[in-house]
Image 1 (cartoon, rainbow, N blue to C red):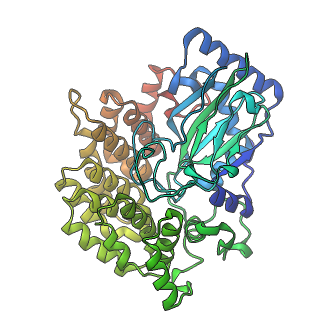
Image 2 (tube, rainbow, N blue to C red):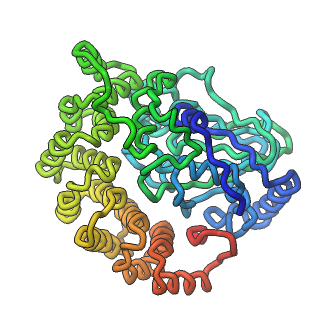
Image 3 (tube, one colour):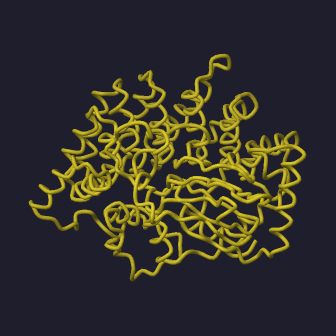
Length: 495
């Protein structure tokens, strides 16, 4: 494999601000892309869409993601040990296909009320043919990745979002591109497929999803140390969000939020703007308050009756990661409201995004998992158990036990979507723990073979790979022998 070509500081900033990057692989020629187009055309004609199994059906697709430009961009944005998710899809736009609605993608069919402003998930879209406007290219709304609500889900509701999904159409971007183009998009950017107005041109787009497995401790792109103090003044209303994410990706060691300069008038203005009609202004104000450690008004909003106010506060409070007092206040609220799904799920999400700074919340998170009836709350707690680094064997043991208890808590006859979503989250958290999760091997093996949810099985296989002991790898190899698998794919490509 060629050495990855890492992104520059400016490219990372561009992605954080606009939510996308257009890439051109350097190791693949026109013949390669033409061959992929012909292969997928034949598969669709003879078999239909293979869905998640597209990579084993066309193993050459792996070459796209092994290309140094593409792999370098993914490593830059998701860290060295990123992984390809089990869900992937080949999208075909035939002549006569109509416009989709603007939307944010679900998480492999599962809805997440709170998504991730911090870079944990990215989608890659690969086009094996030249794509014109008439063929129905993918359209995206740049800078919409931080919008709180999905415009498709909430299209019939009166909301306070005022997002790009409802205005500013002059900035819509249509992916008119040459064969071989790869577009990386923030997982939560607003996008849609557009109408194919040709008579006989077929447009394919391969969608693959990738996610981060490790919390950032240093830049994983081609970083110039002289650019460390990036204030994101070029990001418009997203400035405090981009500044926060940049610092998080830097490892959080360069910029301390206590250095944020503000006046009492600033605080008054931002507090007032929390009730503005424009969602981008509200989110800007919430993040600015968090960066200045003015967290009390935000914590109060976690119990607000309006969902959008709760979600905005939750996103912003992740930026209070260095404030122990804020974390302590959130712990008290979670302890008191653990059976109240709305604030409890928001707080668990906040701790999951804080990573190592939320280490003291582990006992509480486990207590909540064991005592709540809400799968939503359990799910965000499970997510936190995978993002908070574990410092000692005692923490590892109790966390692994908690996550494996979730995995074995399944009813194959009555398996709700919320329950299976929580199990796949628990399996992914065990994969993030990696080699220290070796006590989970028997349960992971059981999930691999017995869980009827393919994404739980896929994440269980990933966890076994990451554990990496002889016992774990023996299970992996044994499973691969009976699975539709081809060389050059990751184990998670089986589903």
